[in-house]
Image 1 (cartoon, rainbow, N blue to C red):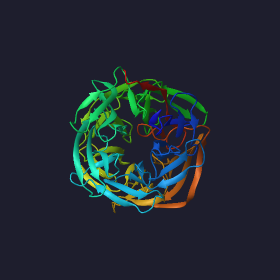
Image 2: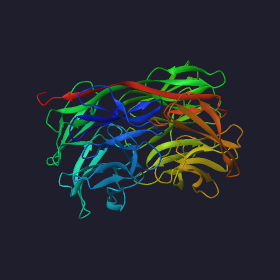
Image 3: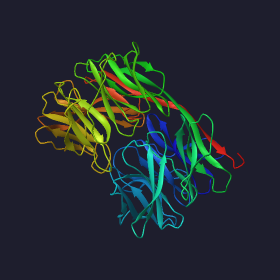
Image 4: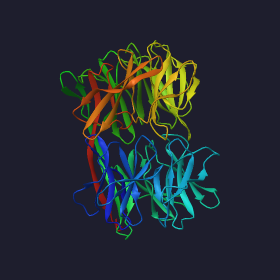
Length: 522
């Protein structure tokens, strides 16, 4: 269970959970019982909150276009609400506030989703807003922002809707890299609740806006998240649960599967020679490990351990690999041999590293980063990590063409989502397949096409797009349809595939989550 939110009357909880590889929206009684699944279409979703009358639940998508939707609480057809994310209704229900991908602004629109206007932009210093809580009066907003993606320091501001001015309300250190923020009002206008990690344990904490003090609310091993104060004063609902899962390799020709790891894992990257895979193991809120193994799960080697590690790419000869460490809030890239020897750091780049790929000749690296409220940037460096230079803005580079003339790229979020290419000579992000919502793209083994997957309910389909000299040829064709589904995104890329589509490696996240009520007496 994630992105849990409580209805205004305190009787119902909405949340997201995986179904056949796709995150869907559910609802259940706060007193317990069987959950009711509300959404069934493609695209991973997260619940944002209820309408003021409790009849609808607002939700957005993990990646793809910036769109906020509403679905009836008792089930029914969803409707599109606004072109944004992390929607918060005004206290009188007449309008909405929301954010947008790659942006530094807070937006406002009427209940129809029209007449959009900018409320405030965090320009000086540049910050990226990640959460909005309207004050009870409706004239002000509590906006939580971070300086960069994955930051652990959350900065709070009181933004006036009328005057378009912001007042600093302090900084909260959550002590964990932020994929999202579960901050809610406890006493509206005065205190908020959120989960934070302290001394290795993730519990609920209270932040007082007046004196800027932090007070621990729950204790124990945790992890406790998604606090939901009951409006009738019965206490605080929250989620407690642990992640588990598997990393699985599927052989397409034999239709056989083998589990590489029986733990919470993700971000698999298959070596070009098709013999090994690197992946990240998640041991807790502040503990990750980088591992390499063969595709049968044998010959495992642990290469690194830190708070927040991510996989990068293999060298063309499969002898080296790249990984990143986001522990400090600023990504650091490293190159290491597949046997764990020869560790060295890549030169500094601005922002948080989202992807890295090697050039086909193994002489260069292309490093894609996310920075403060702007579209991704691609940096170029030598293969040893030296001589870092800004290469192009506007998309994420995933793979290099064998002839060295193009990079295959994408924009996974925002209004310009799609598959792109970057001509080396022009250094521009040029759309190839606008509107395609996918995470990971590779050139096929024949170098005459590229491959990408799309996930729908119950299955994943890989498409092949013919391509030559920077131009697509014809329409995408189905290259492989799997009889099962897996998430495309989980802690990063949740899958990888060989360039001949004979092997698919994918994460199968799982776990156990429970809904608790902390009474006032406790």
